[in-house]
Amino acid sequence: MDSFRFVHAADLHIDSPFAGIGDADNRVANRLREATYEAFQNLVDLCVNSEADFLVIAGDVYDGADRSVRAQLRFRDGLSRLADAGIQTFVVHGNHDPLDGWQSSISWPQGVHIFGATPEWVDVDKNGKTIAAVQGISYPTREVTDNLATRFSPPQSGDVFSIGLLHANVGAIKAHENYAPCTVEDLSSSGIDYWALGHVHTRQTLKRSAPVIAYPGNTQGRHPNETGARGALIVDVDSNGESKSEFVALDVVRWERDEVDISGIDTIDQLDSMIRQHTDNLSAQAEGRDVVLRLTLAGRGPMHEQLAAKSAVQDLLEAARDSWSGSTPWVWVEMIVDSTRPEIDMEARSKQDDFLGATLKRALISSIEEDEINRLTEIVSDVYSGRRNGLDRPDDEQVSAWAEEARWYLAELLEQGK
Image (tube, rainbow, N blue to C red; front, top):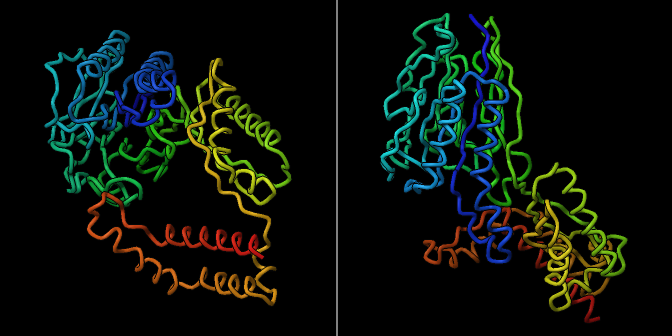
């Protein structure tokens, strides 16, 4: 078996709209509008510069089923550049860009293979010799709940490295729709050497050998929950059929979450300086990329009362944005969340023999009783009944957080009213 190299990417989401962010800053909106395109160009550059033999893309090339002409043309142009460099591309479509979505009459470059709704094996040739075989399947429509992994056929030859290209939720990973659900065992029993997966946006390797089962994550973060580096995997396969992979970041705008502790901070200008220090650090860590940041203020201290003043948090937010207004790269603080607490020792205060102590004692007990959480969930359930208002029913964690917030609010009111 000859050694070779391929790149495994997924979830490009070209033309993602990044809804809501652009309302506050046109510069940020314009940058994000181009971010998925630039990340794709970085992917093409990676394939060319690393001298990859081929590229596999495991679904969700586009962000929507009705992909724009602009997105399709840019994708075609990128694949044309790969074809000119002698790099083949193998693509499946996922739930965001299923086969029944609208698409233009695009002529794809030579060396590009887009899989249909039925799995098939396609050979990868190099210098007149087959070095690998790829089998893939695209979503015929958006919601696919069948186990597509069971439709894959075993490799046609044990002498050729085999790759399964699949957009699926393996092991019912939370935070993602359970499309094409399957298990690690389903994939392991296939005889395929490497499963190139897509759909889950967080990079992870579910199995490291016999077979390798990997998600590269998406190439560009798209919202505050997709923090950190995003990119693709370079996979090297040696003459023994053993593979090793290396992650390479491709994102151009990095999403981050950070926390500033107000403990020990006495003035607003000190807090403002601390926020700037945190944004400076994140910018340095992003290595030349722009950063969209969601910042949380936490901890207990005298700043809690000052932050409660009208527009205090909003003014801090605007000051943080203004400090980066003329900079390139920039850090744009998308939101500041005030989760600070007053200087009240809840446990110690609950032991005092007065009304506040008795109230806090009861509140502290209820915070750990499952029955109390169930009771609170039942109280608010009517608000969410049937989801007529478009709201998701809260889980126990959310109800518990509300109870915690109410407890601190009550303690603060009673302490101030002494």
